[in-house]
Amino acid sequence: MRPEPVVRFDRARMCRIERMEDQHFWFVCRRRILASWLRLVCPPGACAVDVGAGTGYTVRWLEAQGWRAFGIEPLAAGEARGQIPMVCGVGERLPIRSGSIEVVLFLDVLEHADDAACLREAWRVLRPGGHVIVSVPAMPWLWSKRDEEAGHRRRYTKHDLLRLLRTTGFEPVACRYFVAFLFPIVAVTRIAGRWWGAAQRVEESPGRWGNALAFALTMLEVRLGDRLHWPFGSTLLALARRP
Image 1 (cartoon, one colour):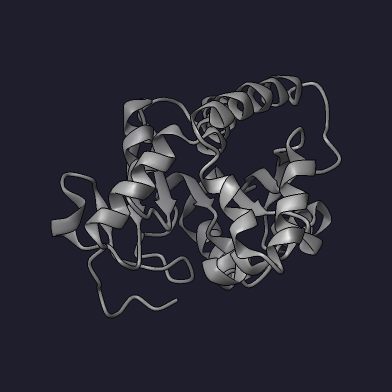
Image 2 (spheres, rainbow, N blue to C red; image 1 turned 90 degrees about the vertical axis):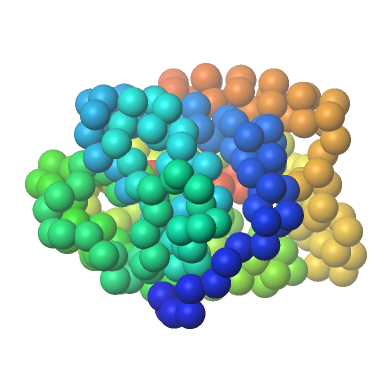
């Protein structure tokens, strides 16, 4: 990824993505996990940065939860972001002073970039005792056209992600698979999608009732996941601490 040129987002595409972030079960349920981790390690009023902030939805959500937040985005254009605090930059070279941040979030970013370089930068900008929160696509054998279209470089196993965090100086605090209950459906759509691209679209557009059912199942998974460790899932989430 490169910080130049700065390109404006297509507004219609932005609106579609923002609606998905606001309503899609995957984003809503993932925010429940993120919120519980943030409350555990980051007091209200602390500074959090969302790297690869996209539309800025997560930045607004963090601010609404009581944290001071801003986003780093290679395509950030101030006039397209409204009042959302956004800075143009990339994960491998964060435009942030060393030791100044309490929490760094990489939500679906590391698979697009030099993941080790991004985490080393996170270690640099975090205060001692600060935390990084990571979300990445899981299970390399789920690789499909959807990964290629999204510009992914890799998918991760739990072992891969934990090793990456440790080798970049972090102490893992928590690591869990996400979307375990719906994993059979995801696996079928991803495998079918290798030959029939439309099969994967059901994940993005499950419909009103499909989204409601998926939300109920995934929220049950999230609540039980506080006590149980799922052995699989389409996404990996990790919380790690800078010593």
